Amino acid sequence: MKVLVTGGGGFLGQALCRGLVERGHEVASFSRGHYPELDAIGVRQFRGDLADAAAVSAAVRGHDAVFHNAAKAGSWGSRESYRLANVVGTDNVIAACRAHGVGRLVHTSTPSVTHRATHPVAGGTAEDVPYGEHLKAPYAATKLQAEQAVLAANDAALATVALRPRLIWGPGDRLLLPRIAERARGGRLRLVGDGDNLVDTTYIDNAAQAHFDAFEHLGPGAACAGRAYFISNGEPMPMRAILNALLAAVGAPPVERSLPFPVAYAIGAACEAAWTLLPLRGEPPLTRFLAEQLATTHWYDMEPARRDFGYVPGVTIAEGLERLAASVAPTSGPLQCRR
Picture 1 (cartoon, helix red, strand yellow):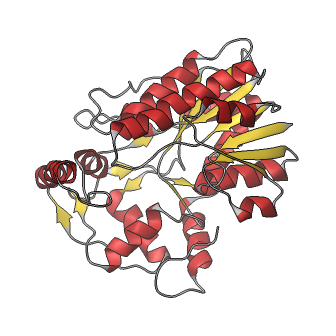
Picture 2: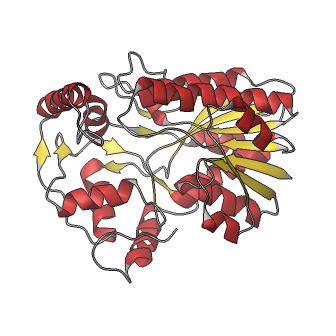
């Protein structure tokens, strides 16, 4: 089968491409850059922007299925930049699938679409956890719109499913974990609250496996068609414990200090104001949304994913931590994870 992966050059995107190639599919990637790692495994590469409907259409043409994994992530940026990538981009993917007769669309969403800082839901499923309200972060707000569009597009001609992997980590991460480790080494990392809030995370191989499982079961009338699913390792841990386990695996010092949530939230609001009003570079060190995410309980029931498409995490957190440590063991200094 011919499969297109949007965002194939990213952390999860490369795992999806590798896994699809290993399963015998003819794989292509649509990204803004070019990646030698994809060349090495025989993945054809299309370059373009999700907001460019013509470029998206050209990439989708000739494929049987699409894994829509590309998105603008992060906790900071203009709302318009998020809208163009996540809302307009997803609309373009859906339109291209329809125009070229693509039968299956697997969409990578996020648990952030259900973010409810004042009403955390523990152990919930996508069936009983409502969408978030008054979302402050443009990432969460636009990903919510994108997920709704994908699920609404499900019909007899195009079967769709949305997966919400929670906090993906593992060897090959060049963004999130290296940034956290850098802050820890510089003494600039803090917990928000007491760090006892239970959170789910997802080892990279499990996140990819969930996509493959959903893809293999997806079709018109399938149990998973037109539905969203939380994805994780199914091993909720206190924020303090999982964060320090990840830091230990990459040779970074543990985080021991914390900020009370009201203080962190106020700092986040002040940072947002400063980065909005002043010509400051990069992302603010803290935002209100990030403070809420760090202090809130976030763990979910994997039963719907197991029931509807057989997802069972194949790598435990303990095993994943061993693999992560092994991937960085030969290096010293800044984190250098294998791709």
